[in-house]
Length: 238
Image (cartoon, helix red, strand yellow):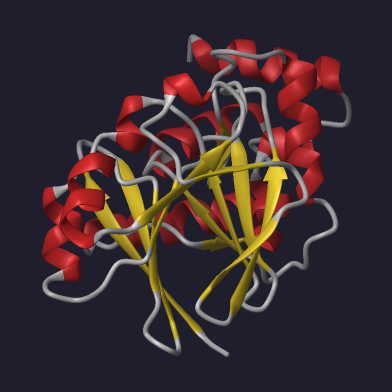
């Protein structure tokens, strides 16, 4: 079993994730725009379209991709009327396959109602949409600080080498805030330098290991909901 993971930049700062199993089966996660995804797929196959949540910058390319490739669409079972038509509504604890690669489903609300995260234990990899970003987390658009704090800590059991595949390239601005609230964090300073090198070379800052995020991300390092909520309020106006 194997899974190739490729990031596809779309819109101003989104990532679509293209997953290719060893048997050629393919899925995309959160296709917010169709053109770059079609460019990456070419005449190849697309079997599954996976949605973490309903926001338009994560769903805008779904219908065109479904029509072109006859792909099945999987996404949150909550509020299906907010989403493109689903072939399967997913619940917390569900499992499905991309070819022979198992994908596990976690319900991770806080940023959006019904938000899902997709976990591939074999890699290991985490497709976390807008819940976790490198050095940051999602805004509280449709949920509470307690919900998002709890969602982030659903990732606690995952190994350090888990690849965090988030939905946006927000790392530079997130690190600026992280350094503001945690200026003495040596691991964060190392990550900041690494990020600048990547961006200056025109390369993405994702995926990043979950271990790196645990050492550098102030939202993962918050000891309780109260501190997490205060950090989120500060970041909203930073």
